Image (cartoon, rainbow, N blue to C red):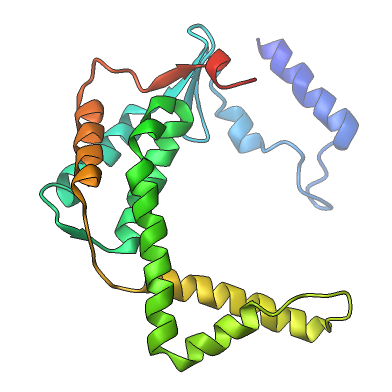
Length: 205
């Protein structure tokens, strides 16, 4: 294995250039290379890849983190802010990359995010003159004759509109269907007998 790794590094250097740190950055991150773990089970980009079981899964630490979020913020809740729901959807979506069945428990979460964003946009449009101006600028059509300075203004307006819509502090009621989704998700994450992993063959076409 040591010779295999050395050959891989040499191949990279042969193609990309041998290290000359006074001129350029090394093509191989040597600190990461020295700390490399050679194993059938590795954590890559936060997901556990197991080449013996041929599965990709979630780390136990991330599982506990999401379960703590559900237990501390989503028990007996009657309303939510858009930022809170977006955080929850983002974390569960990360689990869904490795454990696909979780996606089937999230339709009302996605629907709640979409509804809240639409309502936030309507609220800002009806209460803020500056927001209406930005909306008008953001919806301006881009053509081949649009000046570069106008393109910058349009792109800036699009970014500002999206940011303001996501930052509104309005509260939205949690329907019973969403409460059931959250309860079921907590039950699955709490059940250690359920491995949050999926075979490669079910993910890769």
